[in-house]
Structure formats: structure tokens, C-alpha cells
Length: 352
Image (cartoon, rainbow, N blue to C red):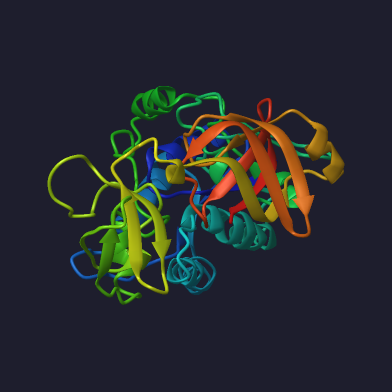
């Protein structure tokens, strides 16, 4: 009997993942990853409640349960990285880094050393194991999470199971209700990966000092003040506190001068790009890079954004440039862009 260690967060997706694995005949162990326990001003970290919920689910399912403490690694690999990137004026994606460094690296390594044959999570994604394993889109396109998973190593993919990848969210909820799991009605977690329900600005303000600076409109006129350029991101609309008239959108940041540039025009050319430059490229398969240049590729520049056709893909030194079939809005340095071919994830990189 194969042993699977499933990451249990206390939420409905990971709970149903564990349920399905048990039904499929695996020897299942639930693991709560303790990645963050620090309270922040006005925000109590919910890790103890999450841990207790995960433990209750394990008891309900009659599976072994344990906790892995990855707090030091998470702080070093995810939080420190996130703070460095924001300080440099970029907008990183902590969930992608968490998946790369914690869930599908440290958790996987620890679980295998602990006797597991596989690890599993409640991600909406599918995997095809084999000599060249493939990461595939989930059946539920509205919930698909492959955008966050593209930096998994090919070796790790062969050791990963995604039990709910063939289900829709409503089917997952229905299964949880049918089996009376305590997580059946639990709300979605939309906060920072493993940190809880806290806004990114509130979180960053504990580590970065914001200084007041100018908000400059498309005509070069100073129209207001902000509380730190590091806290804003390209395309952002809310939180500008500029009164009256049409909404403003951030088009650019100057970290050295501490200025942010905005526009009221959604068609402003500074908000749109037909070319994506990527660094730190990561290919999920072992196929020669030349195939990626020739194949019919699609690209996604943010979670849930539509897939856009890539007309041409070039590499110069360590930078890849994708020329797109249509303009994409609010391309943001530090975020990821992910390549697809059909329902298969090929890899991606960091927008530069």
C-alpha cells in the first residue's frame, strides 16, 4: 500500500483531497505545515485554529496526523524574498515562491524522508506521471491553480498527487457535505500564503518604511500624496486616495524618487504591452528549448487572466521575450507569466 502525506490546511479542498486518497486505497497521513505564527498589529495569526481544524478533519477521516514546523524556512525563502522584491519596486507572488520552496520542496523532502511515497495537496490541478511528467490544467477552469505551480521541479512532479483536479469547486463542497466534514462550509482563504486574512500593504508596513511622495497624473501634474511607492503596484486602482472624478490607475513607479504615476485613461498606452520580457525562466519538462520557440504557445500573465497566443518567443542571454497576439493590461515586474500548450503547462518566468 502506497503512503501519501497530504498537506491539510483545515480548508475544504485539502480535506476532500485526503478523503479521496483514503477512498482510493492509499495509506494517508495528514500534515499541517506551520509556516507562520506571528501576530501582527490588529491581526491575530489564525494558525492555531487552522491546526485544530486540520486535526479534526484527520480524526473524522481516521487518518494519522502530524505537524511539520517550517517557520524558519518560510520566513527566509518566502517572506524575506517578498520584502526584498517590494523594496526594489517589484511586485512578487509569494504563493508561487511558497509552492516552489516550501510545499513542493521542503515538505516533499521531509515527507519522503518520513516514509511517504507521495505528497498531495488540495490544488486544482492535474498531473500525468512518467518519464517526462506533465502538469495539466484542472477540469474547473475557474478554480485552476496551475499558474501558481509552474515552478515545481520535474522530479517533484512525479511524487505529487492532486486528488481534486478532476472536480469542480461545487463538487468538492458537495463531497465534504456528504461526508459531514467540518470544513464543508469553511470560507475560502484569500490572504497571503499561510499568513491569513491580511492585506499585503498591512503586512509589508511591518517591515518596510513608507515615505510620503507625489502622485503624478498623465499630464505630469501632481494631484496628491501617497504613503510609500513600495506599497503600490502597476494597474492598481484602490488605495490611491485621490478624490473626485474618474478612477485613477497606477502606470509606473519611481522607487528612487518615491513617485507614482497614474492615469484616468484605461486605454493609456502605458497600461498596455504586446511584449513580455521574462527572467528566471523555468521549464517544467526536459524538452529542448528550441521546441518552446517553435510550438504554438499560449501565455497567462496573472491568475485567472485569459490565455493569449504567443506569436514569437526569443531568447537573448538570460532574458526571454514573448511577442503576443494582442495587448495585455498592467504587466507588472516581479509577477509571473506562464506558458501553456493545450492543457499542458510548459513553464514560465518572472516579468522584468
